[in-house]
Length: 100
Image (cartoon, rainbow, N blue to C red; front, top):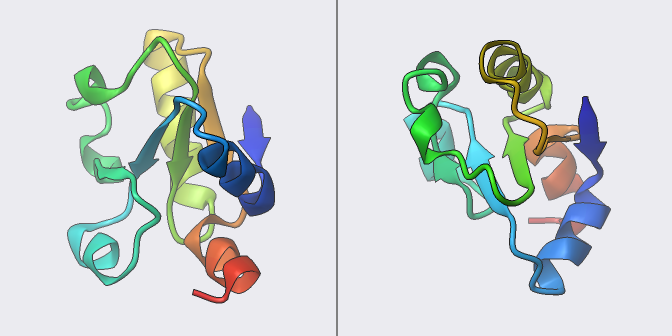
């Protein structure tokens, strides 16, 4: 499974790289804080897989990086996606790194 650090992701975002961010947490978590991704809760990830871009890197995130790993595993097993990346440490690591 591909993964990315908060620092590396921020560099890619700041440089204007064309990528998609997907938040797999619940609505209330997304409302509280997010890094700009669209919300597809983990429990709906397979049903909403049509929202996932297959032509560019897609970074999944959650609070700690565990639910996003599960989402990627499910999608890779069922649909053989090869462009999915997990944010290491999730939003907690992002907030620690960037003091948000």
